[in-house]
Length: 512
Image (cartoon, helix red, strand yellow):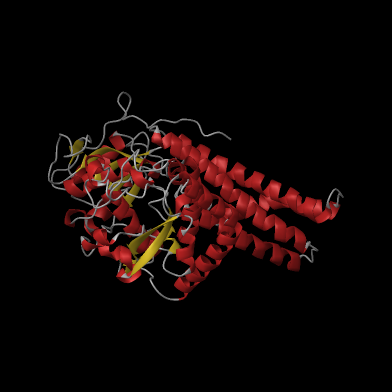
């Protein structure tokens, strides 16, 4: 199934029933749910745009094909070319069972589609739940199910479903970059946080939202939101009417005293029956969903924010995975490492390895290893390239088409092969496979308290900075990504970053 280019809907004009006028004094009485009699598009159900319905259908088909392929592979591995009727009967029911369990695990929910980690978690949960269902059915119905089929088919379905969803997400991200497959938003709140939200959504277009208009208390009426091209179409009390008039999918409310509990309750009443989604930003920066939980307290929903995990069993697991994977990688990649070392040696005068002092966890210095990619007098020639620094707004020094880079070094940088000696730093425990970028002492010297939180974890061979633009990132963007990783670290996030690293390296964009 193909996801077609579906553009952002434009605000309605002719034929649209007039929107309810905003009440100057706010909400003067309890609001009843709106119905189709009052607004032509109010259906009483959550509206799903055409592109989202196609995406959901594509995930169902993808999961079905994944289960079929996994079942066929399991039968071929277990029985070869022999046809076993009992096995075929069991495998014929597997695709339907798999799709049903994925749906029950939330794998087809619109809120999860295209979100990456949560979508993959749903597929993984479905694998565990499907195993439990097969075990219970086998016991209750006295069925004889080959363990070989289960051992191959279930992991195969999980893996292939994850791959299918990755392909679909890449397709949607490409469409979103062209301005399609976007949810339309009316942003509500004070001007500054609303403008920040607009800029963030414009920058991270893959998130799938675009702001059509703003409703702010300090600049009601008309005009344009400062620093953006988003029109201001009313004050806070006009939010529901504006969203209906523009046929928006979502109303996003930023945190402020004006948008507190009473206002949110009234706004939710105004939106009832319209199918318009209500999102509330809790005012927390760079804190991911797994750390936040809503807890009701005397009728008041409170957001509980868990502390980030910097020590404990999960960190020990990460340490074990780091060192084990690094040791295996060194053994497997040894021929490549020797070949690269020989190429560096033959290409230009100087040592094979470049050693540089970097700052690790809790501010401890260590010597980071890389294959040398520059001429030996690179530091002496740095001053003459100061005007070409791509990171003039921060302490990083990055120059595109740097003349100090050698011929072999340019190839190594393009595919990040110069970073491979850092596997030895991982083996010795000074670095991790995934983490923030290892900073220079000069950088750390200008850190403020917030940026210094990067040093709470080990620096990484790869990280969010590596899969989000590499050297094309500004200093502020690199810091923001590193802090996001520090605040939201998990093994699942590490696996996601490792997966994306292979794609980023093959693309070689932002590498210089």
